[in-house]
Image (cartoon, rainbow, N blue to C red):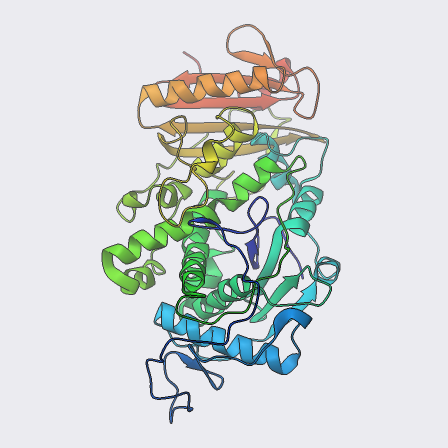
Length: 462
């Protein structure tokens, strides 16, 4: 299984220290319950034709004679998967069109079957975000991160689910299974948009798209979990599970996790507006930016500003061969940059501000974002970049410029040079930086040396 940095599979990630729901960590039941409230249908007999809330011979509220303490054999697993599919149909209001193979593997086997790849372009992007420095490879960083935090995956191209188990006897985590089966349901009903959007667009467009995809799955997962023990009998959750490794990867986690955090709250807002019909309709016009998911009131009428970076480089510095050049990193990625480099109060992201939201990505320094463009350059093995950002007001732009210069000085040890230039003399981000503001525009130019700044992006003639 190939796990590129720009994911072609849909994974469910653990939060820091484990999966976290809208009301905090969920404790696992100590025993399997087989009692259920009265069914909303006449017994548990199979219907004459397929029904919403019935799949593979199981009703959504049907008790199962399954004991998960010693793992699940093939027949028990099939029963759990069938009932979970029926429950997702009941919650989501959509019928599964076909069965989905589910495989349970231990973490070692999952990692042995996967590779993480990253391009030279992506190396510059993550360096520009001050999240993966020149002392580390992006591919190795993400391999360590995914290795610790992936709980399961759905591979659209193969129409199959893999659930990762950390117990000695592989078991199914009910939340992970519900999440990934929702991805399969999405693929069966919205395949035309589902597959295409995952492979195209800027980084920020993909985060917006994933906010809908992961938000839908996370919202269903949350609603599933709330019914366990109250309305439904559910298998106990594993007593231990993966947690995202924060050994130097905290900023990467914050950057990657945003769709999982804000997406369920975004979908909840859509459903409050117009029911599941509004959520279904969003697949034809997904959010185009992480900002629309962070601030769901903006969707669908708000669009980010298109930002261009004119090529003012010297002849020996060239852009990467992409059309249009560069990418857009977006509000969520810039928040991660600030958080990872001391630009926000450490516990800010822990203060979730709305239902179904895990972390708080709304911050005064980044809320005024309306657009950006990051264009990497290279000269042989040397690299540089231009990051141009647009803001609602001059005050927003000034606040971001001040915060960015401050984090370069306080976290990265930058020294002030003439004008708007700072130099980080040592470490993984040892480079020259020019941070300028013109009205609502902030432009950050990076190069290996002060003398190369104009070669990467010459100042405009005044």
